[in-house]
Image 1 (cartoon, one colour):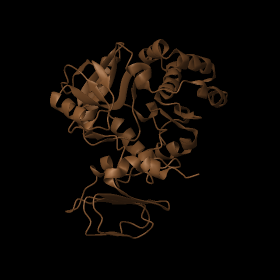
Image 2 (cartoon, rainbow, N blue to C red):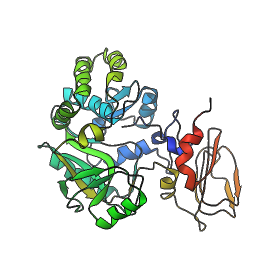
Image 3 (cartoon, rainbow, N blue to C red):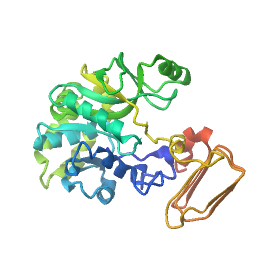
Length: 347
């Protein structure tokens, strides 16, 4: 899934070039490229599919040239994750009726690939010949309020177990209780199922979306597909897969793991994965100008620049500084929840 705009990471991530297509960590690779590479142990490049916005199709091809063109699916407008997943699932089933599928965001970070691959392999084994749906649960390391949680009676790492319930993003006190309890996992938004299961579950719990897909299906793999999708995709109910299926299906399982995962959904989350200097400053400078960032009497800051200008900072504490494509953000880390509001164009 590669259609999001990452608005909480403005100006690094913008609707014109969202974070999945950016080298946010200074590794030389975009997040979508890193996502593809971490799945190569379980999936050949020609079996990858990408659902994205029409505006990003060319960019996806640039970053993932191995993916066949007919497997880059263009949404004419965003309708949340349930229609996105339905479109891919209906099209995959038309050609591969026994497919086993992993659905993943394109813009998350995983540092321990071996642990992650083991969890995905066990989930695929569980779903291949059953009606199980397996979601990846991340063993929490802190009382995080920015993630949803999965409640299970037996969160044994590497074991596929039944999910008791999903929990919305908690407040701090509730997150601390979840962490102390030990039976709660972070919801990574990574789902594993076979194509028969997910199409059946969408028919049962999201029949309106399934109806739209049935109407579109005769055009798949023809020269009419793009026009039909452009005309009818917007008819789909705008709903997440969590609400449409995951909270309704009786077949939900999870596999717990700790692959050093992050959704990189905020500047604070990004800062945790960038090496810091002795004063706790994390700096990434990418682009033609190199890394000419100079800090004086600064501490606890994250600085991310596109290398187009020399950046000199003095006296900043626990702040965000980001310069990209002529846009500049200077903001306290404690106020980062307001960045989406701050960056909205004024009338």
